[in-house]
Length: 262
Length: 219
Figure 1 (cartoon, each protein chain N blue to C red):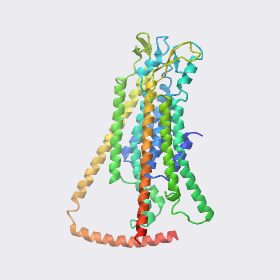
Figure 2 (cartoon, rainbow over the protein chains, first blue to last red; figure 1 turned 120 degrees about the vertical axis):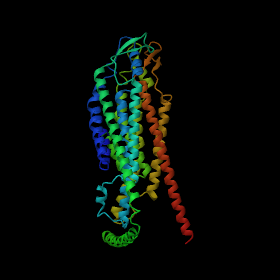
Figure 3 (cartoon, rainbow over the protein chains, first blue to last red; figure 1 turned 90 degrees about the vertical axis):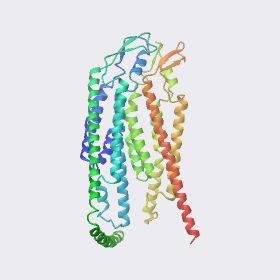
Figure 4 (tube, chains in turn green, orange; figure 1 turned 180 degrees about the vertical axis):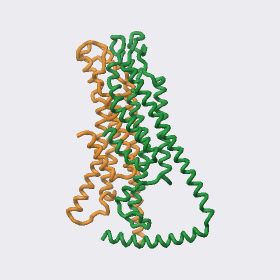
């Protein structure tokens, strides 16, 4: 169980995302998770061992390290990535629920028998409309909120995104104000700025996707509002024709289902 | 043999769960297992090396560490994850038993193997009770062993061979405390999910039973 498992779960959601959503997912996996695992973890790997304070007083180093790094950058990033990936699960659950309903309908031999077999239902790609639109949009909204919250938490906890070389510490049991030196400050600053930059790109992608979905929604609504006013009589005839068709289909479907089960 | 086994087990169980059960599986996977492996393990990795006492007496640090951490937080966390996932095996075994019976008798005994009814419902309810029970037991254990969920920066130790009361400093106490609170929160969420699933199933099947009897009486 590791980031690979997350990749498998989110990969399934990819099929039902918009193009911007697919780009977001790629950026997430390549520029954030992969960089975290392959590079950033090595840079922060020896952070406490190589955090050195100019004192021989035992315990001073531990206390100063804990004071300046209540929660390590690398852990905050990992949590951020986990929280930001989670809303996509809402979409995955909704899609799974829809598939389950369609399978149930198919098994009962419902009149809306559009599928030849269960495999087709499994492979079907759902369009983002109706309730799925609301789930998808809420998932993007939550993603945005989580990204913003974590970026703010970073900024607030570390007074900006720079890693200083030297920190002055006078927490007990340090005998007086001692100099403590952080290991690899420049490398850490570079990676911090990189991660913040990619977070910002992800935020922009999410905002763009949100705008795209809202635009699509309002366009569809205005089309629907436009259509029914034009052909009221014609629509009644269409409806009765459709009803006859449905009855014919349901009869033939029932026959085929009975054929299958015997 | 590693966490992949647990993942496969939980994925298998997912098939026979209710909707709330699937949410529980997702919470356990992502907010507990993944956080444990990707994040928490590294915080506690060098806890003994980084545990420092203000004394040069050999053996004092070891003894003090052992006194304050009889079982490390991270090990308790791992045990909790394993124990909490195991009751789901009961459901898997029961379904396998059903499949076996149908195969041996060459006839359809059950409406659907995975549908939660009759005996399988009892097994499922027992597994839910066990899951919630284990969660509560481990949370209580955590609370009792460490006097709450806080991790202090400094502990005072005067066990032999330490010459007198020495100050010992724990490494990364704030980070450890944050993740312990995270663990407690996710455990609490899982308990709530298990109990709501339990009430939902009991409610659903009692209504079903009641309606069946009502229909029988009036026929």
